[in-house]
Length: 55
Image 1 (spheres, rainbow, N blue to C red):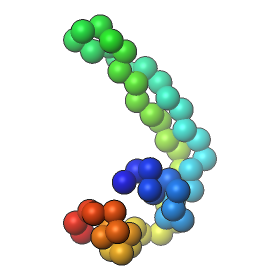
Image 2 (image 1 turned 30 degrees about the horizontal axis):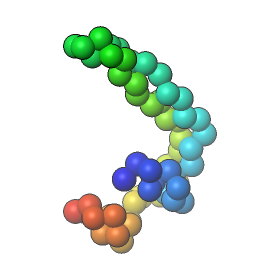
Image 3 (image 1 turned 135 degrees about the vertical axis):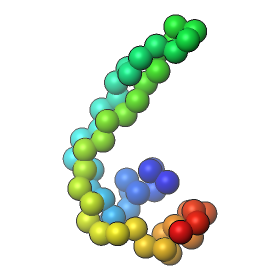
């Protein structure tokens, strides 16, 4: 759903950065994304239905 929101008109994304949050139990790095944006409007029930998300 996040990917669909990024490419929709519901939010404007200003900055995305990938960073290493911590190491897993196995010692592998776990990466997260920081996203800065602004909400333009509420997500419509039509958008949710198209993407298979129950409202």
